[in-house]
Image (cartoon, rainbow, N blue to C red):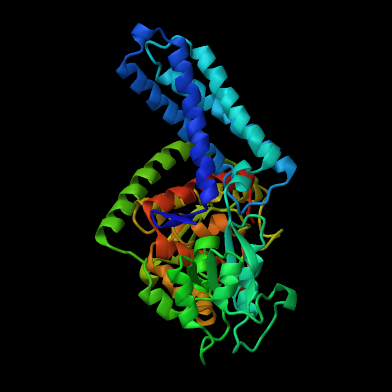
Length: 464
């Protein structure tokens, strides 16, 4: 994994994105050089062409990111993959034609050929995506990982390493002499008669993940772990592993000390100011773009049933301060006639016919953009919860209050990583993604979340 701007990326994904960017740029620039007379191809013209090529390439990366084609954690069947590839190809055609019409290159008369060649390059990349899924996955070496431990935590690490989307290869487990629980079968345990350093050398291990259920009583061979690290082998604790590999901070692996003494949780003036400016600019643009959609939504809600168009509810925000969140009403007016707060569930009978559509497309969330303008919310952050549930969840779930150290968001890392949850257990799983965001939030991560939110809206993933 590679850390960029406080966010972890799989190195193969980055390599694939770079190759896509490079191929489309080269295809356009080659067309420019071939079809332009030598005397007209000045440095200025070349620079203009390069700028347009990068715009096209960036558009391709943005579309593919929104469609989840770079997301190794999303398992797509063949039909889903082909459908998204087709959408990507059509959107890329719009982008290429749009760039050349809005930003024509004066000395470049071969617009038609430019479109053809760039689209051929795009089609080639997408065909490779369909046929192989990840052509670079086989060409780039995967990290060879040894899990130190054989208990429930070690098993959890092993299960994550066995995922098809994993960026590492599980080589086996090494049992601690003092660990009491052994959930890993004997065939998966390495070197019962060898030392840790001998196993690491023999199996050519790149990384050791320490995943012990019990660390006291000399359960960790500190000297051997240090020797492995000095020999170039990466030694990672379980909490850091889950943060880097899965983009979450696991509640069953983290401690207060790890949160306190580790990096992250930057809440400085510069970061706060940049985030606020980004929120203001983004909210204004999105409101202007969404005004027609909001007007139509308000009309059809009013036509379907009597009652208010908007739904106002008190939620808990930054530093536990209450505020009113406003959404388009998607449920019947008597949804909580007994006065007992409850989460929405799959197939909830309280949701209206219009409500099912606007919830699936996330249109019901659009009025919250005005909450972003007045400073109660941010574009990206943990979803705000009702005080009734916050009080209950804070008592049942450790570190739940940490999510209130940043402004709640219209969308968030948990929303694009985990489907809609309606239980305490689901909330625990979503909190693990919220903690990752609070710890590593940056403008770059906000942009990643926004791109992935577009993909969620396009696919309807996780709607309730």
